[in-house]
Length: 453
Image (tube, rainbow, N blue to C red; front, top):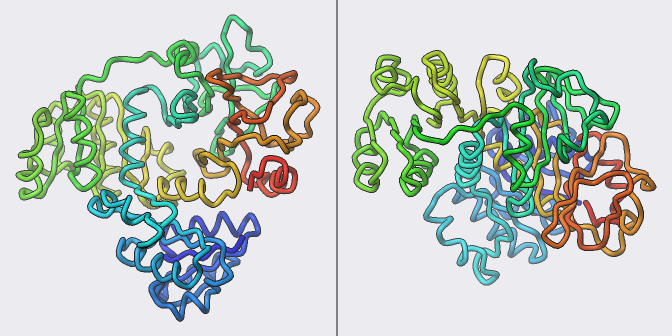
C-alpha cells in the first residue's frame, strides 16, 4: 500500500513511523524544513518539503499511484483542500482528514458527499478524547477503557495491587469459580507481553482484561477494583474539548465545575450551561484549587492547551487528595513517563487521531484498532470471512504466531471467551491482541484469510 501523509507533526510522524516499520510505502509532505529534517534523520520514508495543497507537490509525491491520502496537519483548511485536490488528481484514492473545528464536523454529510470534497473518513480528535474521558468516568478504577462490538465487550486496563489474589499467579491457575477472565495483554515496566497460560501476573503489572459488559462489575471486583458513584467533577481548561466535556456533564446533571483563565470564554460558556459552575481563574493556582475543595473531587480533568500545566495541575490535585486525575498530554514522547511521575491516566488528542487513522490504514474487514499503552501492541477488532483458514477448526489447530492471541469472539449477540477447542465460524467478530513486531507475520499469515491488512 502506498500512503501519502500531509503533515509531519506528531500525528503524521507517528503514523509514518508505524507504517515504515511494517514496510509500507510512505511519503510525507510538510512545509516546515525542521519537520522534514526530523523525518529524514529518523525514518526510512520519502519526504517532500512543500505544501500539501500544492498540486505539483502532490504529483511529485506520487498521488496518482497512491492508495490513500492522510491529511493530518494542525490546519483543518489545509486538510480539506489537500483532500479536494487529491480527489481531482486521483478519483480512486481513499482520503482521511483530521478535522477539529466543530463547524466543519457538523457539516460532515456535505463534506463526505462524493460531489463535494469526497472525503472517505473524518477524524475528530476532540470527540475521541471526550468519549475516552466518559468511558474512564464510567469505570473510575480503570487506567484505560476501550470499547469493542459497540460497547458490548470492553477492554479494561487495571493495575494489579500487591494484595490482589491474582498477583504471582499463572493464568492457567484461574478457576471457573473466578469467572471467564481473559488477560489480553500485560504491561510490565514498559514491556508489552501477550500472555499465554504459563505466564504469570505480577504486582504492579498493568493488565488488559477482556470482559463482557454485563459481567464487568464481577470481573473488576475480582481484581479488587471497587466502584463508587461519580458525584463531583472538576475540569481545568475550557478549550474546545473542555467545553464539549462540560456540556456532556451538564446533560448528565453531574456536579461539575470548570475553571478557565479567559474571562470572555467563561462568560460565553456560563450562558449555555445549567448544571455546571464556571469559574474564572488559574487552574495552576494551589490556593484556588484548595478553595474549590479539589480534594473531595472524584475526578479532576486537566485539559488545557498547555501540557506542562496539565501535568502540574494533576500532581497538585493528587497531593490535595483528588481521587483520580485525567491529564491531557499531546507530546507522544511524554506518554511513557507519565505513570513514573504519578499521573493516573492520560488522554491525548494526537494519540486519539493515531488510533482512529490506524483503523482505516488496515485494509480488509477491520472494524477498530486500539494501540495499547506503550504503543508496542495493538488490540484489533476484525471480521472472520468465509474464505479464511482460521474458520471451522479448533483454535489449538491453528498456527497463530507467538505474540498474538485471540481475546474474544462475538457471535449472534453472544460473547465467547475462546479456549483451545473453540471453533471460529464465518461472520464472527474477533478481538485480536498482537505485538507490533508480529504484524508483518500476521500480514503474511492472514492476508488472504481474514483480508486482515
